[in-house]
Image (cartoon, rainbow, N blue to C red):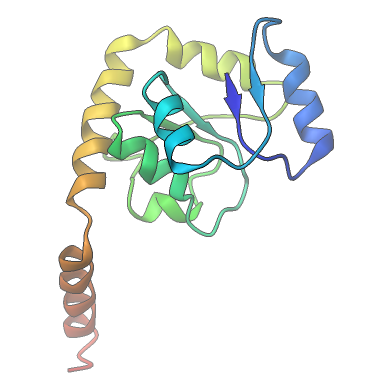
Length: 145
């Protein structure tokens, strides 16, 4: 299943052409209930944008125990979920490589479980108190207080 609104029609068509014929494509914005229902059935969340201010779907997936695969290490969510800490997956998702990239992760159930567990702990630990502590620490390091 592929879910999400398309912002680049050319890239979307290239990716769609590489997907197995039984792939279900949902090209729309989802309600909270629809998102939860889909995440309950998801093994791997694929997030291909080259740029994303944060990528809330990555946090939503992680909180539901679903690991995410990103195309670019510098999207906003990578400030919370770190590739180096095994909290998120990274790979080449160009239209010519996405199939092989996704397939390699799907064939590694142990890796998916490990990333899923780390990402969920990270997602559920981030709240307003954690944000305030991080902000306070940053201010103190910069000697702004």
